[in-house]
Amino acid sequence: MSDSASRDQFGSRIGFILASAGSAVGLGNIWRFPFVAGENGGAAFVLIYLLLVFAIGMPLMLSEFIVGRHGAGNPVASLKRACGKSFAPLGIMGILACLIILSFYAVVGGWTIKYTLDALMGSLGTDVASAGKAFGGFISSPFSVIAFQFLFIAVSFGIVVRGIQGGIEKFCTIFMPVLFVLLVVLAVRSLTLDGAMEGLLFYLKPDFSKVNSAMILSALGQAFFSLSIGVSVMLTYGSYLKKDEPLVGPAFQICLLDSFVAFIAGLVIFPAVFAFGFEPGQGPGLSFVTLPVVFSKMAFGGFFAAIFFFLLVISALTSSMSMLEVVCAWVTGEHGWSRKRATLAVVTVAFLMGVPSAISVGGGLDIAGKSFLDVMDFVASKVMMPIGGIGFALIGGFVVSGFAKEELPERIYSVWRFLCCVVAPVAIGWIFISGLTW
Ligand code: PFF
Image 1 (cartoon, rainbow, N blue to C red):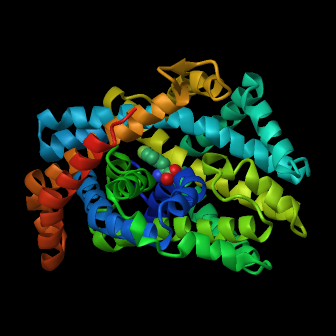
Image 2 (image 1 turned 45 degrees about the vertical axis):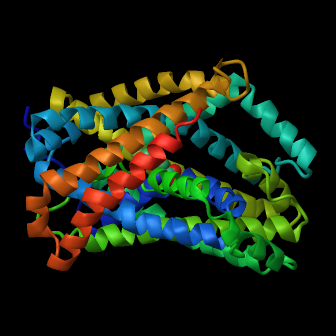
């Protein structure tokens, strides 16, 4: 079924860039990037990460944009139209991956809302033991976790139901700049604390002895998840782009914004953690256990903590709305449902699929030693995203290269095609095989 008639479109180039950057900038940047970088050789990791973002992530993003713009439909329709019928399964896989990621992303999104409210009410822990206990207590009480998950997904619904221009573009055009400004405010606060230098050294002192295949793999996996590629998000956003808009400049700017936010998030976290003598190696608990305590030691700490968690809420919302949009585009495009009905159906399914993840984080719902949430994350990020990435690399290099030749400047086209045909499939195939440990 054709769904290109009467489709919504982005109203402006900047709206498109901010919405795509909004999808890319998420919990992966602010919550995950800093501790992964800190643990994996600091500046050495950051440099390799940047190389991978621009050498592999950006070419794949361009492939998705090209397919989306030529197909001018939902992922399945676009792939069929731009590449041929046999490519439809790649779109189906992307839609499924988005639904899976959305289901558990909304659980963590709910935690960020709860922590923002706690920060505003001044009820975050003031020492690591009590903050750890409070976090453990919260995530193991299914009723509250599910209530906040519901709230998070309801807000996402409220935005996506308004459409591309009136919902997603509008929200991202207002809140992405707010996010950038607040992040810089926090970084300035953190970098001007006494003793900030030690944290800066921990985060950025290059340790090239840590460069090994495991580290490069984790940088590539992080780049992939962070740029939201391989699962048709960028394809879907590209399908709402006007025909005469350039692609290379926006793709470059989106990658730059995404890397900028990830990098600055580390400048917020580590100087503050070290300035107050806390342990940086907290891994995933860093944001929800150590940071509330760090903030409690600062003057006006409650205010800065509220800003930090509010940033997490915005970044999670702009990512979740992109996943929701992929699935809604498919339901409206293929099945002819109204946007309202489709959005409601998709959030209901995503919410119900997320309930086992919400229950599993407090323990009790493990599959082969992993929580249900981790299993969902594994299936989507370690299996589906790399397969999708290889798919879009090969499509870029071999299937839509004719369209690309018309759209990309000549010199960029040759480099892009080489990256798509050779570098990206080999590198992603390698992450896929070596990263596939349970
Ligand atoms: N890029 C998002 C982040 O860094 O948190 C996560 C994400 C969004 C992954 C959308 C996949 C996706 F389709």
